[in-house]
Amino acid sequence: QYFDGRLPAIDIQWSSRLTSSVGMFVSQTGPRSSFLSVQERQGYARKIRLSLPLLRSKPHSEIRGTLAHEMIHQWQYDVRKRRPGHGEDFSQKMAMMNRNGLGITICHTLTQEVEAFTRYEWRCQSCGQGYRRQRRTISPARHRCSECLGSLKEVRLLPQEPSAVRGRGSGHSDVRGDRKEGSASPLQLSFAF
Image 1 (cartoon, rainbow, N blue to C red):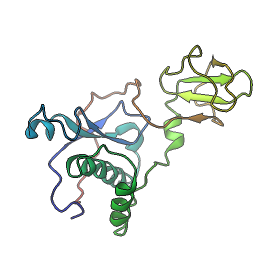
Image 2: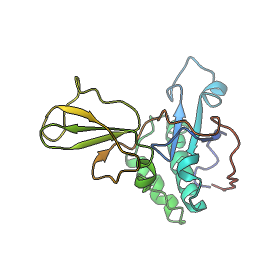
Image 3: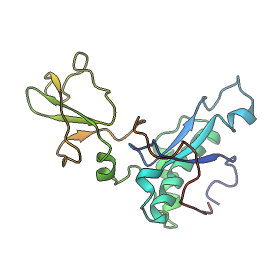
């Protein structure tokens, strides 16, 4: 009803490895790719992934909002033929869908849950600003503090340490869960969009 029947079918997978974001629209090609057939471009080359670890204990309304968010990205890609983002067309579609109570947001509010998967931290040697990541993506030889341009040093992160530091909430994680990517999930969902 929100997409006028124009969204092609897409695989939706529960991911035990997706721990820095609750969901993501994934495409292996660009929206205007000419080297793949339409069937390939709208088939295996794209999918929606939902985070099993982050959404496992959440109410269906949170899962529905996350799925709707990713479907807007799919709409941008498949219908609008644009790179998915959170610009004006996303905001307009989100506002239209939220009038019916879908509860779509641009950013999730699962900061504590995401923080639980953090494994690495760097601190600025000058101002003390901390940077947490799920993977070792900061290289002190190449990166500087965004606050004061000071040098960074990796520090030992204690498990479940409360956070007063900034981290990024996007991208992939190498944290492995107990299920294989795309395997069946204990969560059974049925939503009509």
